[in-house]
Image 1 (tube, rainbow, N blue to C red):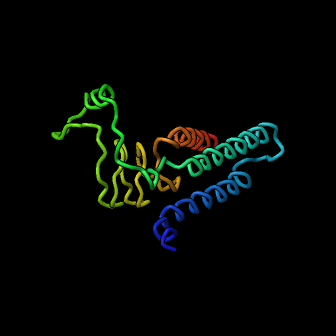
Image 2: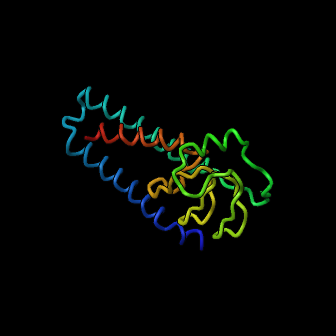
Image 3: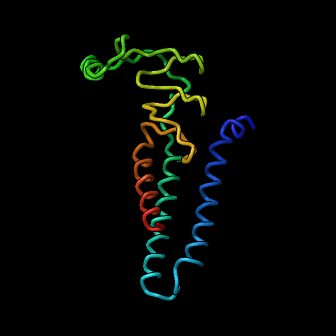
Length: 163
């Protein structure tokens, strides 16, 4: 139950998203699209359904792939090669220089590789974590960033079709 309680905001936002889709679909098809038998209305409705299925598929991709978690048995022995470290440190504005070494995660109480960040919402470390998206119900990181961008595109397309 701890996992469900910790992810309650994600589940609420996902439920609200699906509820808004159902209410929006009913309102658009019953009130706005008149007459229902017109060719244009049927065409736009078919495109809207296809885009919505692609939207759900990319959302499932975000959740299925996950952001990329650090394995439980990872040992703090690897280091990023020096040319990559110097390239990553080129735009660094922090007073602490970037050295590409593993660091200690105080929340997980274990070593984490370079370019890994801890998510306070999920309670886990993610590789190249961008942010935790409550609408997607998942952290956005290395493995699911492409699905997240596609999901945003389909979301914008759905808003364009409904608007």
